Image (tube, rainbow, N blue to C red; front, top):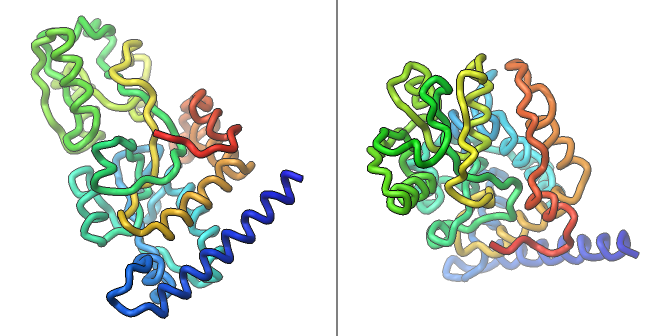
Length: 305
């Protein structure tokens, strides 16, 4: 029965998408039809963004975007081809920075971001988010020799945090709550920031636990660094940002994401990036599924932020 119900749901969803698409393609320019879905059907092109410094989610290697988020997007594109009956659908990849990731979606240069974007109520005013496909908490990393392992030991130090991220608000809140007298230095590149940490120029970096772990592993000497046990936030949902006011496209992405998350393909993608050696780097993050992601996989209900 569950298989039959799922199959019927997928059939009805495909029919609904086809009808919406037909309405969108036939509607006049002044119609409120889903413009994004109609344009994708007309141009046979989906424009996706990526970043270069958020390993293992999104980075550029071997002349193409790679990473966990990128692999998720590839699977979503395959599902979109199937749902819209567009086997020739092409993907246009566009690099963005933290400063431009929302602007390019808002001005409709990008259809969806294949980047690790934390879903927050404030950001929902600018973009629409997909169902989450990862959860991470905010922490900080320092050199072991500097003996800065707890939040109180940051007192009086300079910390580096990437501009435009939610991590800025998290460290600002911790600074106020714990009266730390921090000097908060805003950066623009994770790799450069970690280089400054390695050299001793920066005492600590604030970021998500998974990005910190990846940077430590990539350094070649992770034992020289320590990630804080103290977290500056609970584990927060990471999702794909999309253009607002395109409900049919949003439903299509969430329908596809739900199918993917509940499949063995998702487990294979997750294991590839978080439990197996990542080549050619050869590092293993050894990061099992979080309880929140496990719940998303096992639950039939959609995640609610």
